[in-house]
Image: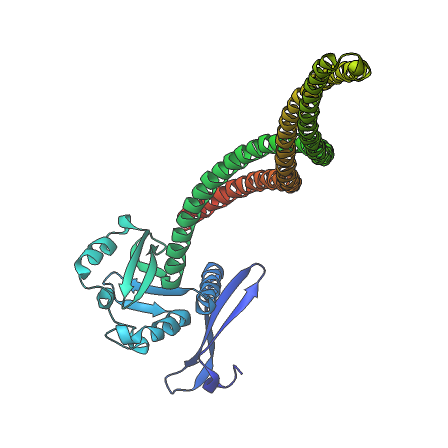
Length: 435
């Protein structure tokens, strides 16, 4: 290769131990332009090669980096955009004054309405690094501006790494709103859970009291029901006795009426006998008078009238005895009539009393029947009340169990709300940290 000057000049790098030598092979000619041979100039470029390789590696990383990178010189002209920047800018072209492919050589003024402020900041590297958010159309860009220096620490320009964070901000805002709403809901849930727990406790306590009271009512109703059954049995016995008394009184009324009729007939018969006795008395008196007249006539007749006088005297004595016996019978008949009249009056009073007893017995029987019906109705109502009180006790027991379950649920909700509040706080802290 070196024998032919057409291959020259030729540059090459060779390694010599740890060093790298940069060789430049040039042709040497005489005055007649005859090729005399190669001339080699060289230098040690180990550090330069290292730097170049490092720069190549960095550039390769930047070219293939998924983040957007741009570099602007001290005049704020864009000197470098990595492919990621170009691709992202293409999505924003409708909001920019130039196309993405035409960005190189443009100043950063195209991104700002009032670029003077940015020029003052970026003109002094002491203001860097710096972060900022800028709006491009509806999109928000997040910028990190860092100073770039050369080996002599001279300020070369600003490197900007950036990203479109519109969606992230929307998510952050929404997350913040959700976290705040979550925290507020957690507080309300805590308050509601505490109130629910308190109410459940009160409900359980009241339910226990009502349950005990309903059990007591149930026992009392059972006692009353038993008493009502006993009262019903007693009333049935009273009704039976009242009916028997009514029957007896009715029979007594009939017997008294019959006796009264008989005694009345006896009085009537006694009155008739009295009339006959009066007739007999009258006849005896007349007979006695005739006997007296006969005696007088016999006395006038003398001896011939003695026998007739004896007979007349006997007749007179017989008339006297008859009159006396008739008087005795009349007195006895009068006594019978008086006693009969008293008996009739007494029997009438007895009949009236028995009628009153009969009426009272009938009234008692009727009242007992009504009371029996009422007592039976009371018994049925008490039975229904007993069933109702048992159902109430059962329902109250269920309510108490539900209240206890509600209290347990409210305690669980309280624990959940505390966990929810902790998660909301963590979420708010995470959102704040990511800003």
